[in-house]
Amino acid sequence: MANAPEKIAIGADGISASIGKSPILHGVTLQLPAGRWTSIVGPNGAGKSTLLRALAGLMPCSGSVHLLGRPLAQWHRGERARALSWLGQNEVAADDLMVYDVAMLGRLPHQPWLSPPSGTDHAAVEQALRATQAWDWRHRALGQLSGGERQRVLLARLLAVQAQVLLMDEPLANLDPPHQADWLLLVRALVAQGTTVVSVLHEVSLALQADDMVVMAAGRVLHHGACDAAATQAALEQVFDHRIHVRQLDGMWMALPSLQRKNNQGTKDVPA
Image 1 (cartoon, rainbow, N blue to C red):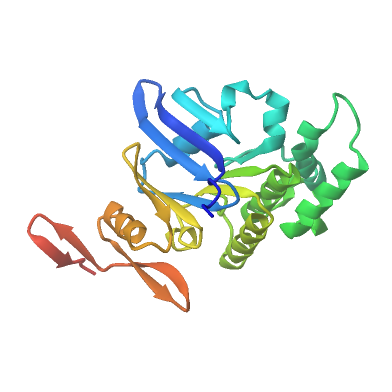
Image 2 (tube, rainbow, N blue to C red):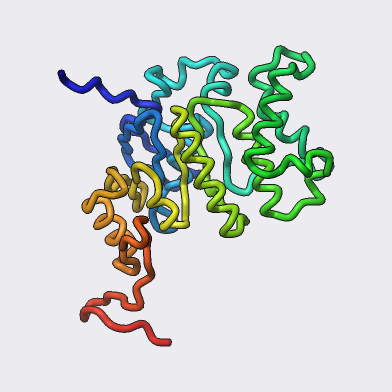
């Protein structure tokens, strides 16, 4: 029996985008499968964040974006906000807001206008805050938290939506290594439940723990494939000018820094 066709959670067809007069994306076509974690990586200025914002419908672009099989433009705003949840870079929230109230903002797409939160809303918020280990701060003001603690609260707001598709731009900002590991376990649990996760990450070794990887440079997709595929790992090394080597350690793929770099005369050691 033939395998069933893979369901696509979100996709782009020939999208281009500019910031001001500067072109950033150049005809990107991409299909991201449902129920999987896809990491987007590439050097600074590759267009990773712009691509993620375009997929979320947060910036104008040419071409088309589809969410769960429907053109993004055909989704009602509230309906889309329940299906797709977004965590951007360096997001801000009022410092005097209580942690619990920040997480409750994730439930707004589920609440009728001017209606108080329901029991379901409160349960979703508690679950999200506990998942990010932020429940104990629920009565504290956001301004009293460290950068890493704030990030965990914003992650709880994302989770409280309980959306089918999660888009995260640099979700590990300000998180220490133990909480980065917690985030990895959380993403794996979400994917196991059928959630689609798409993340832009600078932490390449953590990005390699995803199911699939999109490698970008200069506003274009150079490669899209499984993280454990040799072609994906070769593309990753190439896009970073072979300044990293992908190796397997303790059963996990890791990006290790290279102490050599290439120039026009070949390879040389980096001076100490």
